[in-house]
Image 1: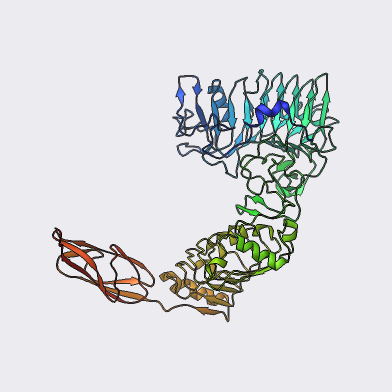
Image 2: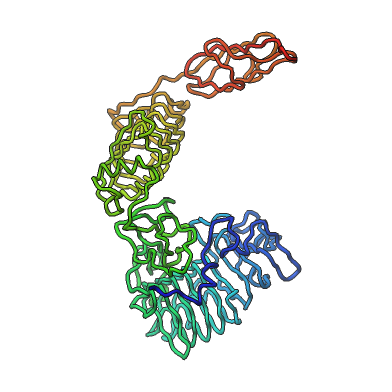
Amino acid sequence: MRQCLPVLLSLLACFVPVRAGSPTRFPYSHLDAANDIQANSTTLTGVIHVDDDAPDDPGPRNVEVSDPQENGTREHPFDRIQEAIEAAVDRASIFVRAGTYRETIDLLGKRITLTGFDPNDPGAAAWPVIDGGGAGPVVSFTHSEDANCVLSGFVITGGRDQTAGAILCSAGSPTIANCLVVGNRATHPKGAAVYCMDSDPTFVNCTISGNHVSGESATMRFINSRAVVANSIVWGNTSAAILTSGDRRPLIRYSAVAGGWQGPGCIDADPLFARAGYWAVPGQLDVMAGPDIPDAVWVAGDYRLRSRMGRYDPKPGKWVPDQETSPCIDAGDPCSPVGPEPSPNGGLVNMGVYGGTTKASKSWSDGPVHFPDANLKAAVEQELWIPDPTPTDMLGLTQLVRPNSYIRENAVMNLAGLEYAVNLQELNLRYHNIRDISALAGLRNLHTVLLLGNYISDISPLAGLSNLRTLDFEQNEITSIAALARLSNLESIGLHRNFVSDVSPLSNLTCLRWVDLRAIPMNQDAYSTYLPRIQANNPGVTLLYDAFFTGRLVVSSTAGGSVIRPGVGAFTYGFYEEVVLEARADPGFEFVGWSGSYSATENPLSLTMDQDYELRANFQSDPNP
């Protein structure tokens, strides 16, 4: 049986950030967005804010020019982290907004929480960067800090020092969680990127990579220190991963350590980062350089873990599948909470900086895929001829063709489970009850999607599917086609009877052969600019659309009341424009309905201008005045 970490049991429940609204778990236990700063002339308690680009800062990203009212509040935050540390007293929490802070910091022995996790946006892709700018250590714990001194949610980089390039811990026991330590250098042969002497720090879900140490030392050096390292990755540095000496030794568990480590759950396996950073020649960032070259510069990477099930890619802001899955996924301490890791998460926390967060890479399971929709499950099983298919079975699903004949009990409503079908090329689920297509976001082999006759309004999950050639979304509820703008291989698009007014996203596509834009409320720009551009960029395209239409609405009223919207008279509206009519009865009368070319009793009445209309509001004496 896997051993748990007794030392961490009381701590790990506090280490993993959770969604807003759960105030009992780290790092939000002290970060209440409603808290106010309590201040005197020299110290602050409560929540202290740091932002190098605040709205009232006259010199954004320039610490030499500060907000004259700078006081650590949300409205007037500090622009340097060290300022906030110096102003804080024990039990204060310092929240640092995303940005790059070019400074080195010293925690000064204070029992404070210094965090880059945003309590109002726990899913934020960017964490704040502390860049030593060639000085170091970037972070120092040298004043007897204890476990209540917490550092979490930062990128620590740019440090250069003889002893400790990134983190120095001397006679202290701080807690360091969900931090990325990259691109730091120690120049002394006995130095380290993380150097701990006579200390008992705790490192949880940290990634330490791309650091350089001269001589024969190590990336992490522990001298007479009973440190705890858990759920972490020490990989891709230029020196040995870990070096220990002295009577007191570290406890290293459930971590990926280059060269291996004899500890429960430790692995010696490539973590498969999405894109590791590297050292480069100044001014030629595409030319790699040795980190021992004094003026070499660090080029940041992406240290999320590759996953066949999906990892978050911050550039498009979407989840993307990989061809392989990191061994660090689901490899953390089984006693650690999974936190808000997205589903599927395997029930075990990931190793590394993103483990236990909303951006943790997804798990690949060998158990049966869970299909919330029984009709979708049946369709997949019939296509594969396999009952209860596993993720591996789903790799064999290349097409799913199940058009429905308006039979309600056979209708598919939920596509969850299809995210495992990463080799799916053709999807045909016409005339079902589908509203959400987010499960398709990572299916990059899709070339044909036929979903006409559903209830889909948001097609943004298709934005990264560059192999798409044929789309048919006739008779849905789509309002925006912005997601199609960069799908350069699109050849056929059906949007008949939707609610799209702006067709400009199609105007720069060049492979179109057939486009159906009939019965949609296109605006004037579509007719004057974008339809001609579509035709010019796609010679020979079959482009179907309605002639520009203006509808005439004539409104009248009987005695006993009035029409307050849009009034009485003749009005002109655009094709498919929505118009609201509202009648109001005079005292002693009541509204009985609309008559003319359209009969209705609703009041107000919503009318779609797909033709000319004449409507009269009818009133009668109120029998019960």
